[in-house]
Amino acid sequence: MGGSDARALSRSLLDLCRMRKLTIATAESCTGGLVAGALTDIPGSSDVIDRGFVTYSNDAKRAMLGVEASTLANFGAVSKETATAMAVGALERAGVDLAVAITGIAGPGGATPGKPVGLVHFAVAARDGRIVHREHRFGAIGRTAVRQRSVVEALRMLMDLARGPKAQPKPRRATAATRLRPRVTRSPRRHAAKRRTPRSPRG
Image 1 (cartoon, one colour):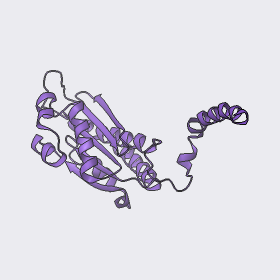
Image 2: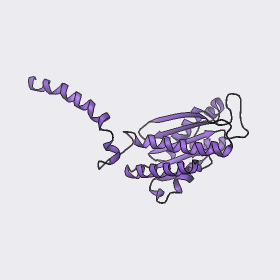
Image 3: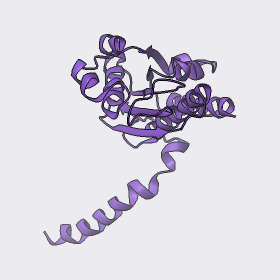
Image 4: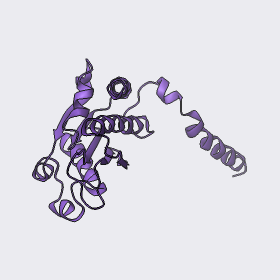
């Protein structure tokens, strides 16, 4: 079930990014490259996927993604702060439009006080400055299940970020995706126009 979800999400995400000319990098710890694997399993993914960082150790997070040693020491590898630093690092090092980072405890071991098995931190970052973090506590559902669910969550977060109004760098044509947002984008402009029009004839 998780595999089919990941495949469907991967296809949708690649189609959306291709339409909006967005590129992606991944930074993975507990998933060990499964997100990059799910995306690159789809034919034609090379025009969207730039690279994937598998940074399992703290040394790798520092060397490959530029995560500060102080961040890892103060908050730990499995934390909001580290996940966010990983996503931003991947975005900057790869020069892409969108990046996702995952760090967690897949189990069966590795739990510490306050950080149980199944705790996973996710972060996505966009070139326009948007950063979103989520924490999930999947529980001790088994290593494979934690990793599979993490892949699906990472793909969903990338999808949300790719849909965002600022995520399209140079929209040339109106697409189905951009037409879905007229209520949000046009209504404030109409109100603004109504307020301005009475003033201009007077002045």
